[in-house]
Image (cartoon, rainbow, N blue to C red; front, top):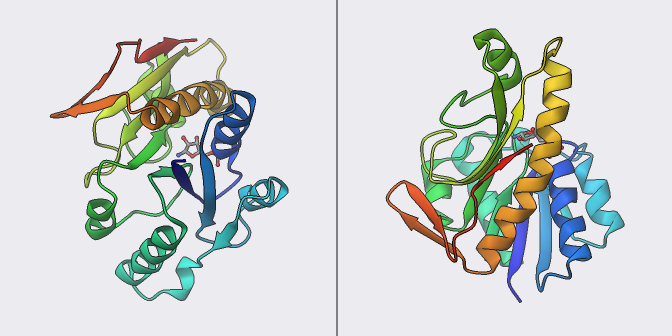
Length: 209
Ligand code: GRF
């Protein structure tokens, strides 16, 4: 059975959406472990409640990014990961880490990439006055929030939205596309061609909500 290791930093609602979808749809998959970069990450509690091994590797105990990432690589390799899922993991990963897991490392970003990479995406979308915002699941490459896009969900920006109402609408969309992208990966349906991802057999890589 293929196995997934997930990295989180906070509440872990995307991780929870993936696990619950896997349970409901009875995916043949093992959730080999969840690792957070600090022990207070709420998502670790959910993992434990599901019997999924949960670990904290405190980034503050490492003097350098390289040393922290080396500890992460060691743990993930011990657990055994066919797929590494970044779900709200708020640390920048070193090129060495990214190369180690190349092709089996995915992330979700709360914007319609390539628009709004980086932080504070909802505030920036409102400031820019866009009519649509959303989320993207992508393979991770060395550029921050770059890398071939697997699927996206778009949501409208509505009159009266603030960053919180918009974030909530986007988060609901995230919870739909992340499980879908993970399942496509597990089913071997993704082909990376240059900076594009093809799903075979084809299926829409954009959900409009
Ligand atoms: C999500 O909005 C995700 O796109 C971003 O961080 C947030 C994590 O939320 N990278 P959660 O921890 O999955 O609830």
